[in-house]
Structures are given as structure tokens and as C-alpha cells.
Image (cartoon, rainbow, N blue to C red; front, side):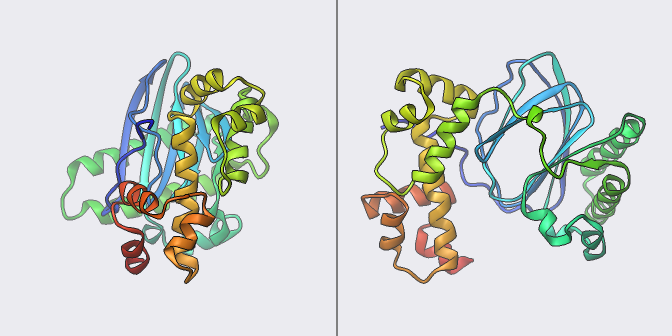
Length: 279
């Protein structure tokens, strides 16, 4: 069996986190991952490539990306240096009055969004992120309220000064079309008994070549991605149906309910039954 290289279960976010880093070409993320909180990713300089839910995007200097909870994503840095800022937060950290000012309001937070900062405002954005990072480092009793206030201001600045890409133009997508075809095939057929050969045929590659290319582009192998998609759908069904856990396992492509339970616990940190009761 292929070793699962996905990230271990993550703890709930207790307070807003902000950090800045410079990544060089060839930097490899330790794990592709998803988490139970929002991620706001801003490129101060350079460029990077995201794989997010069967799409690939190249984002550049001045671009923001908002990633909702439980969305699989993986970042690659292909050329030069990229200075990026990341903020993690819960929906409860956002003021309702601020949410009402967002395009589509509540619905705005349910999908991946990309928006661009005009060049004349980029210095202001970078300074704002620096404030948040410095406040996180102080980490005293005032830090969380201060970070909440700075988060509201950040979203208000984005709403006032940035351009939301309501429909992602084609040029944002990368040329890894076959990888996208493979990922979409998995997303459509995850409940069936599919093999690496089936996925490779849908992408137009040989199984061995697709395996190498997929791992390079997405951060994990085809088997692990198929497992991730199956478990993601199973987790959703556990929360939205009263169906038996065994029935959910079979419906999501698992032929062995015990294997499903072991895989689910490895990803989410609890058994399917405990996950359903907890949430």
C-alpha cells in the first residue's frame, strides 16, 4: 500500500494566526492539506501556484486568495523568490457588519476567491500584514482583540481597494490540463471501483507518467488523493444524513467498512461515529 503523505489531523484554531515567509523556487510544502478554518493568502512579491479542488491557479504580486475551511490545497513555488503572507481565522472572528459588506455576503465565504490589489495600494496591504504578524508575536491578553480588529480592517480594505475576480479568467489557470482532468475524473467517479489505469486513461497519460506528474503537481499520489476525496464526501454525509456508517462507506467507494473507519480516524483524528456525535 502506498504511504499516505497527507497532513496529520489539525487542532482547532484557537486564535487568529498571521505569518510571513519567503519561499524560493523548489520549496516543497511538507504536506498538502485542508483545515477547519479559513486561510487568506497574499503575495507581496513573486508568484506561486496553487492546486485547489481540481483547479490550478498561478497567483502573482498583489493577488489575494481566500480559501474556505475543509478545502484541499497545495502550493508550489516554481521560479525566483516569493514573499507571501498568510492569515488563518475562524468565521466567528469576522464581524457580521463586515460580512454584510462583502459581495454576496455569507455566500462569499463558501468558495475560493481571488482578488487583486492595485499597485498603488500594495504598500498599504503589506504594512497591514506586518502589523498582524507583529501583533501575533506579542501574544499577550490584548493580542486576540487587536488581531480581530486588524482582520476586520483587512477585509474592509479589500472590499474598498481590491478587484474581485468574479469569474476566473482562463489565463489564471495553468497548463497542467491533464492533471486537472485526472483530479476531476476522481471527483466524479470516487464512489466507483476505479484504478490508476482508469484515471490515467481519462487524463491521456500512461499510469507511471501520470503518477509522477500528479505527485509533482498536487503534492500527493493518485491513491492518496482518491482517498482524500472519498473521506471528504463521507465526512459530509456523516453530518448531513442519518444513514448507517457502513452504507456511507460503501457509497463513498470503500469496499471494507473497517478499512474505512481506520482511514477516517487517521485523517480526522476520531472514528466516524465520534465525528458524527461531536459535530
